[in-house]
Amino acid sequence: MKNENLYNYILGIADNSLILGQRMGELCGHGPSLETDIACTNISLDLFGQVRSYFQYASKIAGDNRSEDDIAMLRKEREYKNVLLVEQPNTDFAYTMARQFLFDVYHLAFLSELQKSTDLTLSAIANKCIKEVSYHERFSSDWVKRLGDGTEESKAKMQDAINYLWTYTDELFHQTEADKIMVSEGAGVDVTKLKEAYYKNVGDLLEVATLEIPESKYFQKGGKEGIHTEHLGYLLSDLQYMQRTYPNMEW
Amino acid sequence: MSEEQIRSLENQFEARIARDEKIEPKDWMPEKYRKTHIRQMSQHAHSEVVGMLPEGNWITRAPSLRRKVALLAKVQDEAGHGLYLYSACETLGISRDELYDQLHSGKAKYSSIFNYPTVTWADMGAIGWLVDGAAIINQVPLCNTSYGPYARAMIRVCKEESFHQRQGYEIMIKLANGTPEQKELAQDALNRWWWPSLMMLGPTDAESIHTEQSMKWKLKRKSNDDLRQQFIDQTVPQAELIGLTIPDPDLKWNEEKGCYDFGEINWDEFWQVVKGHGPCNKERMKARVGAWEEGEWVRDAAMAHAEKKQERKQKQAV
Ligand SMILES: [Fe+2]
Ligand SMILES: [Fe+2]
Ligand SMILES: [Fe+2]
Image 1 (tube, chains in turn cyan, purple):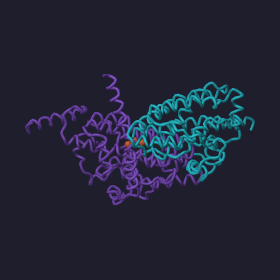
Image 2: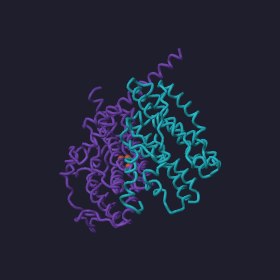
Image 3: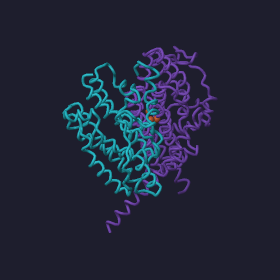
Image 4: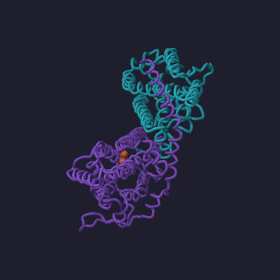
């Protein structure tokens, strides 16, 4: 492939939205209230909309007749490049909202940088997505505050979720090879530069939510290189089910 | 109020409806009118919400990104219909929590169609085409019903349902024009959803209760059997157009009457499902009750948080 770095770079961004969108889609009809159901479905819908823009672009870059769906649904486990954070399961509503919040704060900062990309397609996509993502961030922050500063039970649950998911936050700021090359070309976002503001913003909100900022210095990584947690395989078997069972058909 | 005064109010009330005036939440209304509307509107709201489950079942497995997005949007619309209808119902002086209690305790009903399982992707097509299609036939006449909030809700809901219906039919077209395997998926889905969709239009007129009063209040404008005939006459050509066969050997065009004759509906099955013994009644209730119970700590926390915020605000004001 001529533009392999760009292709890999797009996948690195898009897979986060794809996997998180899939997780949020699982909840449809099972949320704690009709309003949260609608909001979670809406987040999923936004994320899949973004995924389509990215993969349509990736398909053009790849130039090998693979469609957006082939790219989304017909790769092997080790070829998905999402961070481990977004594949974590919907253990309960606190986990779902904590995962969303920890990703949204990053996602928002990332997109506001991507808007400046010299790659005009990427900057246009970022431009389109940022409004949606700032809504997601407001929604998930509000829930972290509500559950953190709600009842004792909800506080314990939200603290547990934050503690558990914290270990996956550091990976957001790791650079892949494709990242480094894209940054040097002015098309990519230097994620290492987002780290400080990220932990500051997250920390500030946790404080408002009367939650403790986890102190653990041990982190997990691997998603960006395609080494995932055991959760991902099951998610992919749903995501890929139709494409694998009925290959080469149009829907 | 004396009995005579009440009778006079009732007469004025019925006269307003006869003149096609809308009844609004603050207007006087007979208790029976209120209760009947709470029952029908909440049943409709519950159907929208329980109806999210069979389709939600395929969101994670949708065959393409385009279909996944469309399905998510559809299920989100249904949630919106639920919300809208619960709010309309609340104007009659009952809370959403009370309505949920009625659903969860089994006191309130919801449309029986959602007690059938969605076993293949083609069911997403069949549901949109047939189930939303039958819902539209049921609901379009309600856009002119006498209770204002319900009529307005129906106008908005029907617009979206007809979009769902086209989307579902489009899924079927694609399958029917696809590979033999896809065509088989489509035919199989039609076979399974056809009869339950006919049942959706309600028991046959001979067995239907409350119809006369409902006609007067414009809660019902055509009989179940008329609606069913309308649905069949509209849907059969759509099936033919895409080369699918309606699973009814007795179905044939009746030149004289200008409509289709059709076979006997299995009313035993209908009543079995209505009484709670359909293929998925228990799963659907378990999913709804489960979501509600597991969500209790979340709703409590939201309430507690709002109270704390309010308190802090008041303290600041002092
Ligand atoms: Fe409906
Ligand atoms: Fe609906
Ligand atoms: Fe619908």
